[in-house]
Amino acid sequence: MNENYRHQQLLELVNQQKRISTADIIRALAVSPATARRDINKLDEMGLLKKVRNGAEALDANSLLNSKKLEKKQVLQRQINNLDEKSRIAEAAAKLCEDDSSIILTCGSTMLLLSNFLCGRNLQVITNYLPLANNLIEQDHQNVVIMGGQYNKNQAIMLSINSEKTEYAANIMFTSGKGLTAEGLYKNDILIANSEQHMIEKVDKLVVLLDSTKLGKRVGMLFSELAKIDVLITGKEADPEIVQQLRDKGLKVILA
Image 1 (cartoon, helix red, strand yellow):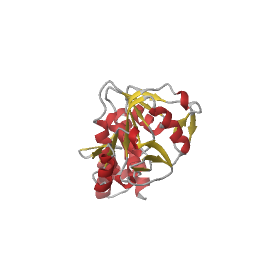
Image 2 (cartoon, rainbow, N blue to C red; image 1 turned 135 degrees about the vertical axis):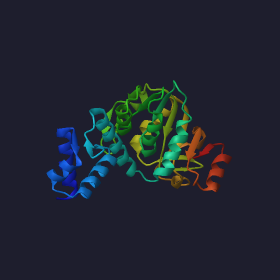
Image 3 (tube, rainbow, N blue to C red; image 1 turned 120 degrees about the vertical axis):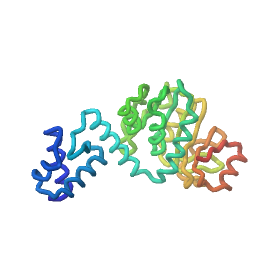
Image 4 (cartoon, one colour; image 1 turned 180 degrees about the horizontal axis):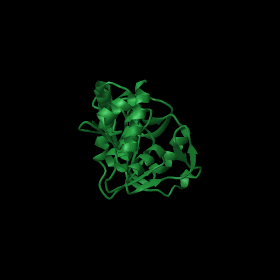
């Protein structure tokens, strides 16, 4: 019996009986005491059951739901490049958001991480990025606005053909891109860039979140001139010369 199948059988036993002893697991699955204890420990660490003295207990509905949410979040985070740097950038970005304010989050992995730092705070999050919206909704954030339009499966966002007539306004707009130079921020998806450009007109402050590997690169189209960007948040790994060039141009740069 391989491990995955054994774990499935063990979880079925626990969920049926609600509580099961290690001795019963040994008999039911025909495994050694060491294997039974190892399986209980592993499933407990995964948040799929609760380890108790001499056995295991099934999780209640809320605990099981929370464990599934945690597992989903962990899977998403494992898929993010430069996770540590992007997490620092997201945490620094969250400090710019004041309670009782409204913010726009565009698409991208750093925005998804930022949503975790903002969740539960007294602020409105406006987004067209469905994974981000779902993340906030699943964590019971109280004020989420999903911008409408046609669903773009490849980018997991909503794009509206009437984006120039957007009615959404916010205190801060956070966005990212594929590169940033002294000329400005670059994006490589024209449709997304066009949609987001109309949002800029309705916000008080534009903040760019970009990991250090993208500084100094020109990729795709110029999305926003540097003068229209209020703040850049990047990692402390950023090239000091590039950072200084941007600051000399008047851009506020925060190193996370």
